[in-house]
Image (cartoon, rainbow, N blue to C red):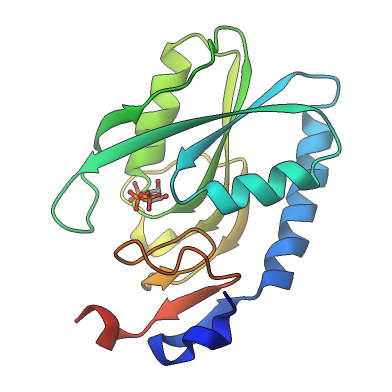
Length: 183
Ligand code: PRP
């Protein structure tokens, strides 16, 4: 779905499909350099990271393996609490593996901070993070993210994997949701 097809539900376009494509190509070049000659496992965090994973993985000019986790963060409403439950675990044994967690957005940072520790504790050789978006003003914990696409303002954004009540994930770009949609 194109951003202009939901223009009435959004107030501002943050990123077009083309801007995202260019940024993922940039990140892919860095990842190829950093993991040259290595066996890399991409771990996508469902559901938001599906689009980033699909486009980033196809942009990479190297072999990668892909696996998925689904986690749920206990919290009130949209606020994440840092207490995380695994809904779907990896199929892969990551002992001695180089792992790159693929995320759509880092908001408070609580999910990622927990997830990285969890994967490190399983004996991975390295655990790094690539996130398309980060909201610096929403950070509650400092997460060391090796690859960040865009830093964005602390607004309710949807599209390219990001939802509101499970809608808008299939937008080609990222936009700010209009308050009348959720108020
Ligand atoms: C989003 C996003 C991250 C997390 C970031 O997922 O994909 O996993 O929230 O928030 P945090 O930095 O405050 O921890 P969400 O829980 O909305 O699930 P979804 O990917 O299925 O939409």
